Amino acid sequence: MAGSKKSDGTAASRARVDGAAAEGKAPRTERGRKTLRKLLDASAVEFGEKGFHEASVSSITRRAGVALGSFYTYFDSKDALFRALVQDMSENVRTSARSALKEDMGALEIERAALAAFLAFAREHKEIYRIIDEAEFVDPESYRNHYETIAGRIRARIEAGAAAGELREGLGELEAWAIMGMNVFVGLRFAVWGGESGEASDPDEVAAAVNRLLARGIERR
Image (cartoon, rainbow, N blue to C red; front, side, top):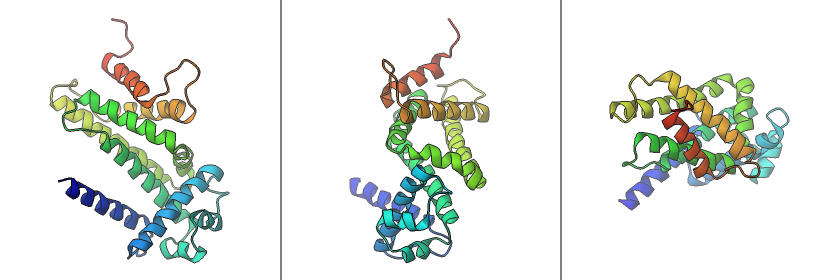
């Protein structure tokens, strides 16, 4: 079974990389997939440091250690690469959260684990905030799709929790967006900016505190 999971993961990873290229430009070899992966990783650093408008294709290819011509083998423009990067980062957020979940987890425990995984990911990839924020203006469709997709996943989880009798009935889109908004800004404050002296900054501790807020609210009882 372990070998099967590894094989499935490799296939999914290949599919993700293949899908990142412009239409009709998916890599046909493992070497091509590695080159495309290098371009995506280099562009994350470049866009994260300089922003979309100051970043250049030539600088991205230098960071990636590939020839300039290799860029156009997979992408038609810097805009196309940026769109692919936003989608790639969204998928990385999904896989990081999914890898932290276990079948025997309860509804609230799932939300805690997913948030802790996101915080750990954001701490290692702080550039995601700048890149996603820029997407609102560079590629609004990708920006909206990023958040709608995440909210959809949260909604599915909390509705499943309600159906199982662990969460109250009537939870849906509004609550999913509220939870996502809280998670995003908690990530900005504690994963990207970092906790101040005496404040919890460990992803698990922060996620546990947010989880208590979900469970108990802020009303005095």
